[in-house]
Length: 214
Ligand SMILES: [Zn+2]
Image (cartoon, rainbow, N blue to C red; front, side, top):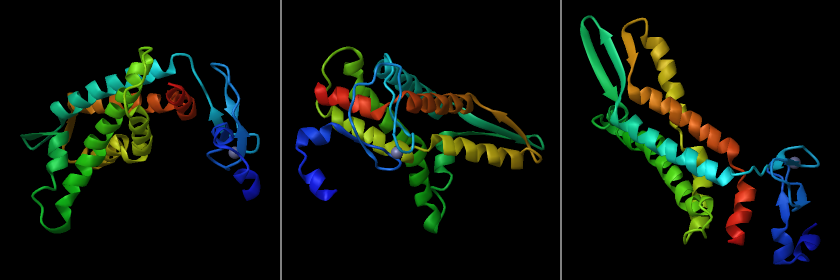
């Protein structure tokens, strides 16, 4: 196996696709728009090019970025009990540990990075890398680097985990106090749905082909 691979030239290697699940190697073939290429061994999806996919990705990422601004700017939750009420924004949630002592203080930094900074960095990278391509122009300098960063950041952008955590906490608090959702909560829900839709539309290998050719 190793000698067979070492005999391959750089161009041959570019024409190979490894299955993301079982590492089975396949030769690159042009897949028609709308069709799906699957691994011959485990049937995992290898390629799923869609018409206008890059423009869709840029549009969804731009909309998600706008919703992120709303999610950070507006109140997230309102809690009322015994005549007292309190509002909290996402920034308040992030800063909740800032004044804590010991090991809790760095949690603010980590929460802020995971639910705001990394998702925003990922969306900006996608728009930077694919925006000009969606408009039919050549990619910007370092577009490949930005797209690679966006793909690598995907597991670390955890806005949806935050929403699940909030939902679980609300179920526990709802017996003790009246809980109301602010505009930021719905903005966050919209953001999570847009990012999920973006991940479904993104066919990473097809986009690499476009970036490599440009
Ligand atoms: Zn496979």
